[in-house]
Length: 362
Image (cartoon, rainbow, N blue to C red; front, side, top):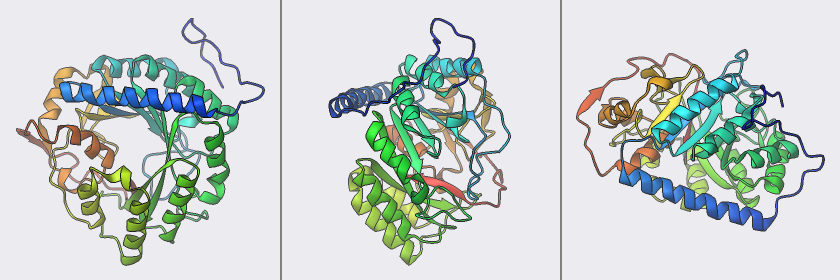
């Protein structure tokens, strides 16, 4: 791993010559302590509305793949320098952010990713990551363990790679076995149905495999670049229902939201984007989410508690047709309180990409 200049809190890391398998006792202990931290973060959110619950932060826009449905990557960007990542993470800590998830692009391409994760944990936040999984090896997984990663999500789009996506079970199954053997962090595998996916049945196969390896499993729907959905077809709906039956516990509180998405129907909810959920791009700007980049567009260094409180009370006109489940789930914490008394219309035709887009349904 490429290192920046070492400081007392940034000691060089070495890759162990032999990577030990993760023990069951160690995993169970980490799972218990992680759960306690998660419960504490929810309690803090219930007690006060003045801080973000979750932030997605992008340290690397470049990706080693080019899935045709994705508009969140390029093939040329440099990694955000580690010192700048430290500053941005510390600003999230200053705001009291409970969960910080690294996304991209492909975050495993960042040469100092372990240090990014360790810095997230230093703020007291829960550390998550969304990755395509291609670059995982036993020693890399052990470094993620040592850095303190809490959660990892991998989306697997099909059983065999095709022109839409190379994130296939055939390619990634060996990586999943490595995770099952070595990872001390929680792993979730997301499968997909919808436009561009040739074989809906693949989603069921992926979910069965994930559960068989001891991971959690979720399912997503692919929509177009405008964020709008068409109702699932009969075959897709059949797979959708079967996967949900496999993973019923994951859906206990959010079935209504997910059902509406699957049926192409609007939802009535209070979006707390910009407050409970924020998205920080590679340029260090705060956005409502990955699909409303540009709003509010304030540097994270300048984002204040007053901004969080303002956005908490601001209704977003895109909310009824929103498909970003993580924003909904975070907003659900406050569904019962604080009616929104201002309105903003983000985007206004902001989505112009003709390519499909993946929405994750958890």
